[in-house]
Length: 178
Image 1: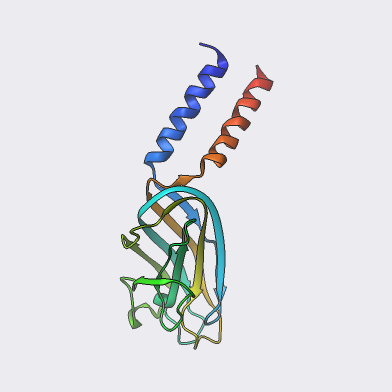
Image 2 (image 1 turned 180 degrees about the vertical axis):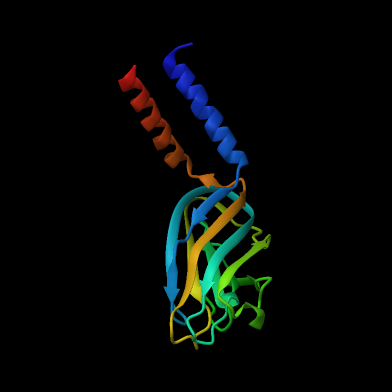
């Protein structure tokens, strides 16, 4: 078996295993006053069946709660949904659900997490947009939503173009060492 055939078989095995695994994305650290948001984009392909989110909340002494955080997801086809929040409604977006930790029980700083399967119809190949909001406009001091990690479930993976570039880089690197 040639080295190129062996590398191609290895790449096919990696791509196959990626398709069956969760895709994890980081939405970083977000310091947000009421109504403010940060936007992140990822080149992904596939269908979303559910997701889980985890983050560390730091109260900004502004009457905001961890459950005021909004996660908005827009797929490449324009399907636009959001979860959580209080009195902010992202433009063109459809409300899906409050967090399981909704309400005054989430006033304390600390770790929070939830899972949602209210993602029907979200799919596509291309740019997926994820936006984190402080969904309480009364928050005059910034709150921290840190280490925001989202695990996407379904058939969603990095878009084929991104995987192809990784594969070509691996083959080129292998060819130079041969």
